[in-house]
Amino acid sequence: MERLVLSHPQRLARVPAARCFARGAALCAAALVACSEPLLPGPARDDARLDGPLDGLAGPQLAAHAAGDAEFSRHFTPAEGLGPLFIATSCESCHVGDGKGHPLFDITRFGRPGAGGAFDPMRAFGGPQLQHRAILNYLAERTPGGATAVARFTAPAVTGLGLLEAVDDATLLALADPDDRDGDGVSGRVHLVDSTDAIAEFVDFEATLVDGPATRHVPVNGRYVGRFGKKARVVTLLQQTAFAYSEDMGLTTDHVPRDLVNRQVGNFAADAAPDPEVSSATVGNVVFYLRTLRPPPRRDATAPDVLAGARLFGEAGCGGCHLPTLRTGASELAALDRVEFHPFTDLLLHDMGPELDDGGYTEGDARPSEWRTAPLWGLGLAERAQGGGAFYLHDGRARTLRDAIRFHGGEGARSRAAFDRLAPDQQARLLAYLRSL
Image 1: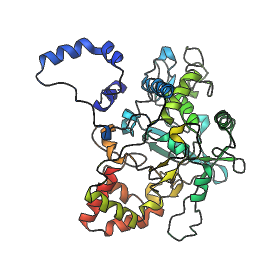
Image 2: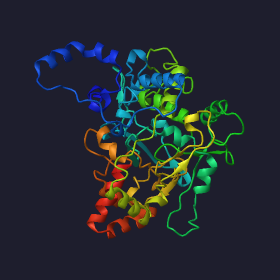
Image 3: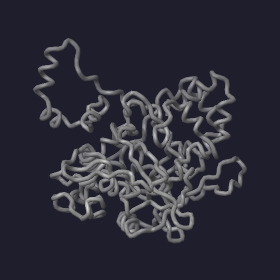
Image 4: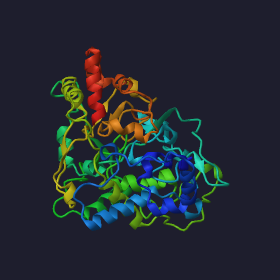
């Protein structure tokens, strides 16, 4: 199935020529001779593609970016360590063209109420993430019967992540308004993540690259500012990458050295590949690739309807959570150093009301109805990465932007009501603005 996803036209431009030739040059040549029309479209316009490196990277940085790109595209086999439990065989299976994933590759997470009102991620039953695929002669997992809270997550786009990571902790802490002191109905808060041995290791590794006092990933009363993931539970891109190799593909690294196992098998038998199955150099290249992916390009930014929609976006209060502009702090990478960018997120948790409460599932100390503000940049390009039909919100439940807006309850209820009060032509302009991002 992953091979079918990779055949999407948007991805073809990124596949190295040698790989294309090795896999199918003879077939392509014969087909092109036989047909009066070319089989493959030309390259997408630059403003219609999500992938591509940040401007200003030096030669060795571009080489590292390209190496990470190749690893991001790599499909693993059981002989290379895939599994024994997994969800997908490559990073790009879930992030086609570096864009938002298709629900076909949604991940499932589960849990149940625990003692004292705490959430139990059911780790003894393989939780909180379900690995629904397995290598030959191994049992895949099934959602355990005791799980009363089950959520589906659609993979996010991965463009511009380095800019989001480079925002100083102090900036996010200053944006937080947990008590809604300004009375605008928006009370976002930073998700402070409990320290674990793994998180401390990731943070310590990142600290070796900092020249001077650290301004990111600094403990706040022993906890760290989360900024990635649907519930802002992930602190760094290194953490995100290492756990994606483990939880999504069943691959061991120096950071997460143990294979996933299914407790129903009754022992710790796993694949026969030597550990670590993915080297530290490979993990580092993928992290660098993610860190240096450019932000999504704007389109039609000066069109009259788009400019009118921008004004309506502000008047409806959408920017209270989808903050248009952020600025990075000091970075060892010049391309990320004190850069103004436009992600349309504040990276904070917001209570979105019962409309987006997935039956009690949560992570960390986020409430079930609290979600990190999803960046809106690249919104108009989502359909290209999702096979021609868009799937919005954390689980793809909304098929149109209108539907996505109408799922906004809680802190988003005022903006939803403001959108509903707009005349049809005004709504169309606001939606045109969103599609331009």
